Image 1: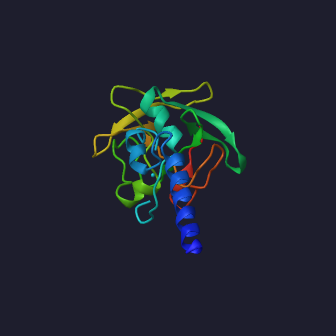
Image 2 (image 1 turned 90 degrees about the vertical axis):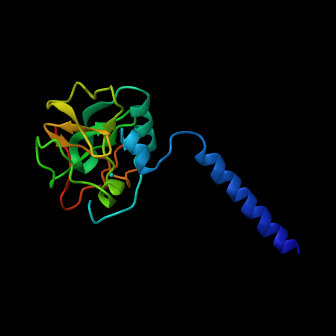
Length: 174
């Protein structure tokens, strides 16, 4: 009997901790990146899903800044949002086409870097190229750099992470 009470109590405490940890801010789901991916915020055959929550929140609340910063072994690359998450490009996208070919499972793993309707991305002092936006099929405004759509990687969890460099995926150089 005491063993059952201990198990139930442990489960209750664990659930309370999970609820408490997850209720304090923006969602970390990829569609949060869709509004944030309006920043936010994620290859066609690869899957998991989530955009950096704080990047998504920053895009939703105001202007999005994209800048160039040193990120470990990746060198100086583009980062975005108030938290400075690494930004990627998909080599299968076509420059100046106005389209992203990263959809469905792809966008779950590499959430689109986007801004809310009516806002535009801002380039930091270190940025040398041109920022713009395209409208995705779902209506989201995805940020572009020199005509190529930009993305985050769902498995990057902190500034300085550059885990999204795979075949057909590159960290964006200024």
